[in-house]
Length: 495
Image (cartoon, rainbow, N blue to C red; front, side, top):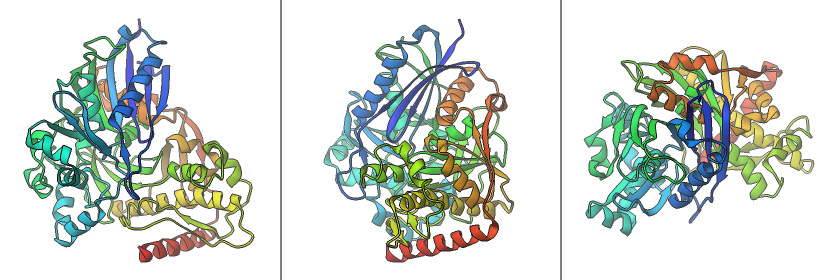
């Protein structure tokens, strides 16, 4: 029988479990959502038992359609900067995970910047001092959560990103490890050595004993033990952060190739090859993957914190739509936004502005403005953010990107993709299989288990579904970008 690869794609709002064979035929798939917790304004948390429950629910579902004995490898991809806290021995969560969107440490990060540490942090990690990353979140928990602090003193505390927690549960606590792509998002890892840096850890008061071991992205991490429905002994052979996984799933394995994933946020990554490239435009340098070949692969990254989450807010916060899929028809009911500008800075502005205190704003409203204008402005706001990021990337590279591969749930919105192509002035390429994050985890598991011998092998799997070309004139684009920039400036000044 044909061997199968099981992919666990643990995202911000839900978990997808996907089973594919070595020819990339989809055998089974299940998505399970879980609850979001907002204890205070700007705070976002996840219950780790609910996350694990979503994984188990996905496994339960797909294993009714798949013989588990055919599964030869497991790949994991995950929301990245979210930090988890659990007991090393019992594996029980000590507190809720603090999610990448959480902004509670904005003041602390600002204080570290004022102390002159950011240049050192950027040089070593490729990151900036922002509450987006794991470091200040972990420090906050150690200083403000008694259960976390007590567990640390007793030597019982295990911390890590979501991949580490899932690995611990899948192996019944035998392995506490992460991969270099996830570790590169913590503010603790040196990009060149791919190891935890003592100086960086000391900034945040973190002990190495609580952190997971850093391993290559592709390779055996451990084997399943005591997981309901899964035989013991299935190797977990790949772990990779979700945006790097999407880059891999888009087969962007050559230097200069780029992708944008439209999920809860929007994430642009460009493969920069075997050398980390420091950005002069406040983009991030990150590990793309490691484990195949002599050197790790690096990427430049820019992220907008709100993309699909903007549509969720229109649905849940304002009640403008009953289902997220209705946004395209509502936005398409008007030919333009008629001057309405929507800056979706609900949790601050990401790259290239890095303003954690900025807040969302809708401007340009008139008596003639309708739900359709606001909906269209919301889609444009998602796209405008990506234009700013891509422009910064091109400035860093000194070259123009010819096109962009797109993926994630919102890339199925044809109107959003056309708006994005118009505002970028570039062609967009949508693959036949748009869930490239989950596909990247399949590739990671297959590369780690030897099903594929090289990252170049994954290029054979990529197939184009649709290409979007710009229809807007340069003059129209320039005017819209000018109005957008003025609105962003107002948001930044008022923060």
